[in-house]
Amino acid sequence: MTKAKIVQAILFISLLLMFCDKNKQFSRRLDNDKWEVTTLSVDGKNQDTLPIIKFTFCQIYEETCTGSWSSLDGKARIAWQFRDGGKTFELSNQTNHGHNLADLNAANQCIRFTGVYEVVNYKRKSLEVKSLKTFGYPGKTVIMKMEKQ
Image (cartoon, rainbow, N blue to C red; front, side, top):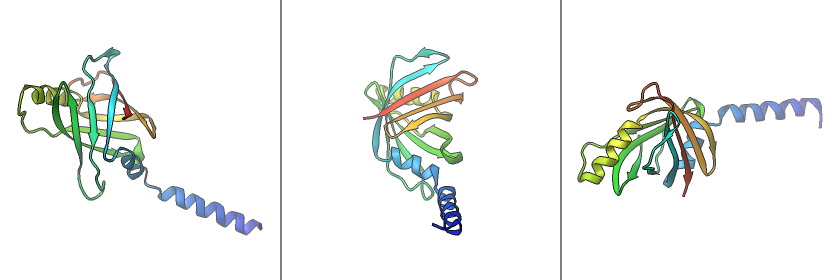
């Protein structure tokens, strides 16, 4: 292989990597799957109730990504997205009212953990995020770890 061909190959690979969309790639890993929250802590104190989050399939640049937050037999609606090349994850409660007490409890928990998270670790079947910017715990370190079911 000549030097010119090696340089061309390196340029091609560099351009390909540059145009890879991490937000889309990270979002596709969540699409239409249930993820069990295995750790949910605030300043090192673990929460007793751990939700299951269902991420609904979406076209990230054409629609709002939605899903559900289920805990204690109740369910809340969420919106979610990755930003900053997959470095930031945002989770937002979208429940407009509870149908029963279980739904209200799930929505209240979801509201407290609504926020902007830093992606700490993201693999095919696990995701760890951390935040100091949640609605219910501003300025406190919130850690959420989840695994694909």
